[in-house]
Image (cartoon, rainbow, N blue to C red; front, side, top):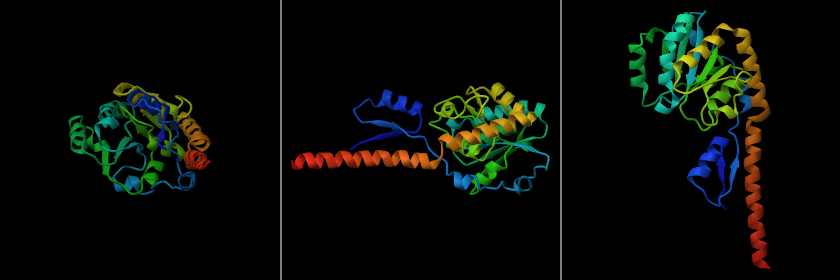
Amino acid sequence: MAHLVAVSRAMERKIAEERPSDVPVSLIYNGVDLVRYDHTDPCCTLREEYGMPAEAQVAGVVARLEPEKGHATLLDAWPRVLRRVPSAWLLVVGEGSRRADLEAQAAALGIMERVVFTGRRDDVPAVTAALDVAVLPSYREAQGLTILEAMALSRPVIASAVGGIPEMIEDGRTGLLVPPHDPDALAAAIIRLLTDHAYADMLARGGHDLVHDRFCVELMVYAIEEIYDEGARAVRFVEVAAAV
């Protein structure tokens, strides 16, 4: 028995628009392993590894270096951030087809001394835990799991108001939402969280509580098990009816 799973209401709508059918669709958000993330220590060598001073304030994006992830907008925002927060550094974590183009963009903007392209890292949770602000400037996004992981690690988050992201972030309570393709708005949000630490801490606490309440892996597994159990019950009913 076919059954589709959508990881956000945005994906539910997309499925309904593109694949209208009698196949049932269930909303099941991706969940975070809270046992793992509640016991992740920040990477204590991060600044030393990349030559950042101890007083550096670090914003970071963890995402594939692909066009839809919005790195270009974040790089465009960075000169504005540096004008207001001279101690700011940007960490770009991940690999992808756009790396050379993004490095060229950073060089053209004159910000390469304050942008670190880490490539692939095998300790992403520890790296995320060491960030002052986590950013996801995507142009489209089904849900945005890296934002949930940052929230689980009590990091304040900023993300584009696209796809399923607004279902996770209540603007001003569990994080900040900005329009996609808007470097001015993105820069303003980053500047605010790097300069108003009390506000950033409040958002971090709100995001952490939200993940614990609604986006833990146990809830995801339970919901998936319910679908399988429902399917098994339907099969047994068909077998009984056929035998009668």
